[in-house]
Length: 293
Image 1: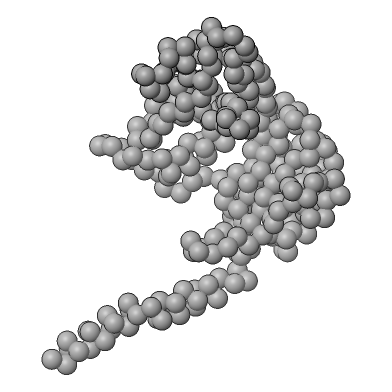
Image 2: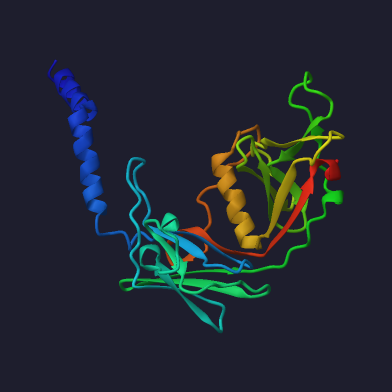
């Protein structure tokens, strides 16, 4: 009887809400002041666009309900091995619109245009720690709409036959390099709706949920100008391509038979870090559904 009473008291203490809150608070307190030891999270990109480039830098989040804690760095800069470009905290940047200012976000002090063939390294100085992340800016072929194999679909058979849409696969495998597209189509209120399609180097990866994106709605043969599609194509380095794929393995995995799930997602942030700082060449073009189908 005594043993049973002791067990009941132990179990009650573990499930009591007050004890659970106390436990979480204790762990959170232990994590305070240890952010630099546990690394940082980096999310940013340098491209061939001529603009102020940005990067977001935070400390890792340990609990779902925790808020992001921005990294206030002594110095953030980008180098291509020859030139260095300083970054300023968004709230201290005189050239950035207030709508773009955000916690943990840094912008290049001057307008930068990435150059094809160069390797860019982002460096972040936080206290006694120095973090870095490097990526190569590769070339990318122009957009060739005629060679794309994009099916034409109708969302509803009751729709008129001249109401046509493009069916985009989110994940496409078997290509000789990594890259991705952003398809932008105007929706009813005149704003642009974006759809992504990723192209991966190598064989099909079983287990990723391959969703469809339906864009368009051009009225073929009707009087007037059909819907215009704004298309962007991004070059992706091998390391960034693997990072993208590993992210989708974690977030869009459907777990079929004989499949495997990856472990921790790789990062190019060193020595201890998460996320990725990438470099991409961007090419743009416009088309209509009539021109593709």
